[in-house]
Structures are given as structure tokens and as C-alpha cells.
Length: 164
Image 1 (cartoon, rainbow, N blue to C red):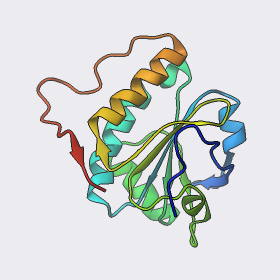
Image 2: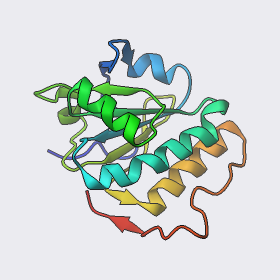
Image 3: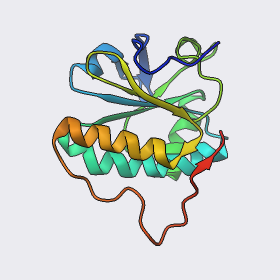
């Protein structure tokens, strides 16, 4: 199983939120690029990464940037995770046997996919990667024609990479 490569079409999906609302990749892409972040609530690297994804969402969400978490856990556990880590973007549930995760070739969490409006994967990465997040931020900023504030603050001791 290999991760969906940059330049390839992202597999379509339809998943429910923690509250039961249905989202499809097609409906999300109709609004613009989508950053999908696959995760498990027990993953320490996911716990570290998601506040930065929330920061990215707060910086660019008003411009139309879409971020969705794709949880491999129950709605209840996912809801606790979202509350604990301040996640306000939609969290979708990929229930066992994790069909969407498998279609995307997710082997480690977190795994991120930035999907362009035409459905092609524009960027991807697993674990926490400072450079991947900056690449994603830059791509979204260019798409919306904005200059966001710094994603990482000088006083923050942010590692370059944390494996998932």
C-alpha cells in the first residue's frame, strides 16, 4: 500500500462528521482546496500537529481554506480530542475497516493531503513536518491571494520533524 502521490487524483470519499453531517470530497472541492488530515486520538504526534492545523485554519479559513480532520476513532473520542486540542474545523469519522484511509494509503498518522480544486493531490506528508506545513500554508495563501501571518512564532521551540 502506498500513499496517494502528489500529482495524482485524490480518491473520492463521503464521510460523516462527529455530529452525523455528511461531507464528500466532491462537495468540499467545489468550495476550493481541501487539506485533509488523517489522525488517531491516541497519537502524540497528532496531538502536537493539530493545534498548528487549527492555527492554519484560523489564518486562512475566512478566505475559504478548508481543513478537515479524518479520524480513525469513534465520534465520542474524536469529539473529546477536538475539544482538548481546540479544533474547530470539521472532523470526519473513517470507521473500521478504514476504507478512506486505505484508499489514500495512510500508513502513519498524522498524514496530510492538500487537494487542489481539480482533485489532484498538491502536497502530502506524514508525521509533523514544519516544512510541509509551511508549504501547505504558502500554497493556500497563493490560491486565495493573501499573505497570512507567520505559522510558527519565534518564541516557539518547534522541531523540524516529528515522526508519526
